[in-house]
Length: 422
Length: 168
Image (cartoon, rainbow over all chains, first blue to last red):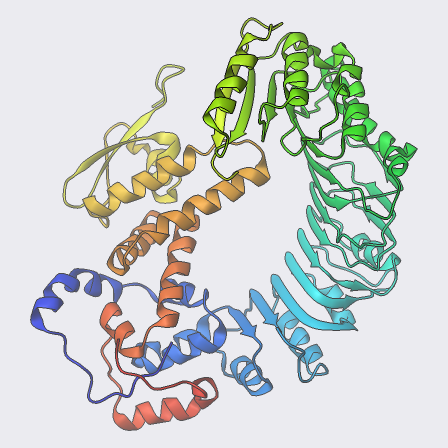
């Protein structure tokens, strides 16, 4: 908040005052707890400035149970910590956008927070120096986000008994075991997001209670082995993944998966078909099978699977995905004719919804749309989205052709949607 | 009182200026205050909300209906959609409306709405001058000149590098 030079305070004109008076009177009735709640949404340095507003506000900032420092200097951080009046600290945020001037002081700050039963930590340091050990032994921590810092706990040194959500953004792990050492000390972890540093070669994620996992890789990642052991997993998202070897344990609780596989230009195509990768996808397929045939267990349906990969992979996958109900081929548009005809028709015996995007009416596109409509016996809806830039004649041609294709499913509705972004 | 199966129960809410509103119960109980009143047996009649006026209550009900209409496609997608809905909801409001909304959300005990509105108020406050904040919040500058100087001195570490400007 900017500072104004006060010259005895301005008086509002009477006319203005009457229209605003209702909210003003009520706002000043707000209890301190609500005002400090509002202050908790701004960085500490700014909330301290509110002390200049009036007597009541002199110490309000000091009761905010949160400290939020953004590229602040030593004096600011130390002063804010010392002048606080409330004992508990629920949230500590420490962000550096350029290299911090002095790393050594940070340990005292973390100890300070941990001693005050901090529940949430959000740290971005821009330093690969390993975080101190006290970090990993905080009993009250429920949420932790670490970005651009070094993590290197040795085996058995981590004890985070309350941690439920962990986000690691481009964290530097000194060794590949560091991740597993960290996870093994988080017995109740439910939600893990990792944006991986490119140097990690082997990524092992094992957690008994984990429900949500998001793995994001950079395009020049060196990682080529992935191991997931998360039997309670309900939601899995993998972005920019490419693995020669994936090993995956039981995934019986999975209800939602969003897998994005890319073919790194340096690696030949055949690696995409490598055995372990197909076994992984097979693991997902088995869940669908289990649900259909094994009603006594309490599995949930894997009803949605969004898969972005090249056509060789998709065709192999579709050959095995007998029970898929929803197919979204929006990211795919390669001009290869005839590949879909190699996909057996039993593939389409359960699919209910198909979505296709960026359809322009080309021969190969019409070819596979015709094939899908002819063979999808229980199809309820096909949604075809075409670019807004498509010419009038092309649009008419597209609609006319598709409407004339024979449909195996009588209830099938074909919807045409304009995509104005293309 | 449960209605016949298939028909959602609706509640009648009354604002402090005697306006009546009909809301589906599943949307209304986003407010813990209303939920408690229902559990205490008020569902049959009209639920009086003494600290909310009609104009604000109408907006709150729009919010309740909007949030409960978001389909549960998947937990992650649902959370994303709810967050965008909240962001849009508060982005359209002027300061006076935000003030009314924070009071209402506090009284009705609706924590997600409260957080969204508080965050917006905080962002607005952060950018404005001291004079502006005093006017909008109805804060009287009750410092003596000596006290004010003392406060500035005590916290000079936060005021460093700030340009002085007039009330805007």
